Length: 120
Image (tube, rainbow, N blue to C red; front, side):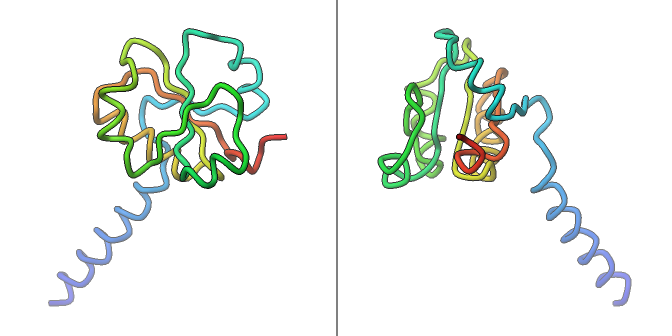
């Protein structure tokens, strides 16, 4: 019984750690680097915050696809041929979004570290 408790604790810890590790194959950039990238028309810019957050403040050129709608809308609205740059408020939801896109077969995915909190 004690072994089972250790096993459950180890699995729980593993899943917690995996949730916060960067996704393999996802590029991470700073907001400073994003300012250079914004000039590239061959990239897709997606803000995964809620419509209310997006309406309150957003970066010109970003399209709003809320995280909870990303899996359904990505296949219809985004090209797997072009890089997708993701942003949210802090970088957490866009990190989750990058995992979703990778699972859907998007190969060029970039997450903006610090999100809108780091944008100035």
